[in-house]
Image (tube, rainbow, N blue to C red):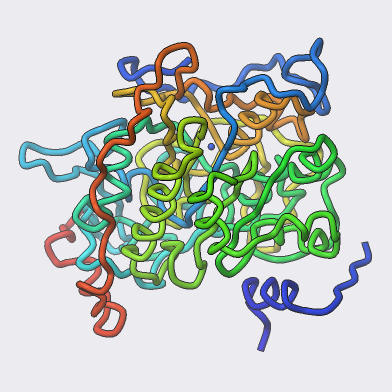
Length: 448
């Protein structure tokens, strides 16, 4: 039986030796998906070309923490929090979004019957492009199943929704590519998927490296705190590099470092991808619980006054979103590696929107950013802080997330706000054994 990407990466972590051959801002302006500028910064250029490379430009922020969950669209998680560009609703407060099922029916957006998911949705290159359908956004159901129209609410994800209702969020944060997990996580750390469109492990490495290598080169401390698998392994040969493996640490070390005030300058904090990441068919409560534990650890630690935590999801997972992804700067000259059944395309368009926001004492109050971001905006934020060279055209021309914080005034959240308690999976964990419920519920299906 072929190994899954997680089995393969897990083996790489514990194996003895492996050898290879070779997402302007304001809370009041109308949302926009304006195309990116044609005046492009070059690969290798610095945010501040007349300042020394690797030098700290934002001394107020000493710790950047990144948490990336899995497989949910903006509408699926935040569509009904009444903040940002979520679902359009009728007079009863119910979403009006629909998609045809190809059998003469319309599937209306519906609240998921339980916190559990099935494997009824998909997120690969073909499915995503069929859902997009040249901007018509009417292929979510026909490309997979009616589960694509399901959504969750604050009752299912109390901490996530409460955090997103308190701290700034971005309602134009898109995943980096119309593709699966590994390509999008490659964009997070390298600014390119290097042609990858699916969850596989080809051996070539990006010519300009990954952001962790820049950290090592310029003496910037970092850790990839992982629960089961490190994102660094999406370029699997990197796990052979002792200088990079030294940056890996177990998740328990993160909680200890946060409590002691010894977090490094950059942290990537990762859930257990088999249970806590919120990927289908998981119970999303475990993800809400994990995210709550991470954020509370940061807010209660002595490093909170100088921390910027960024949270997001790697891609939309196949769930419906009503905003068409705009055009994007191609990261490099490497085209997508397409199979015979894959629709044509390029890395010149973002993937669908994903939830994203910033948690920091410097976070802006009552703020929703409508600026277009993607995962390379996290790279750009890091590059602007330490004046690091751009890895690809995409991160060179991305917009950083720094507009979501105010570093010129007294911190608005120096005293951490009270947030809702995370979900308690033990209270309703039965759906993992009894099933996710009837999807779609009969009330969500009408004749077209």
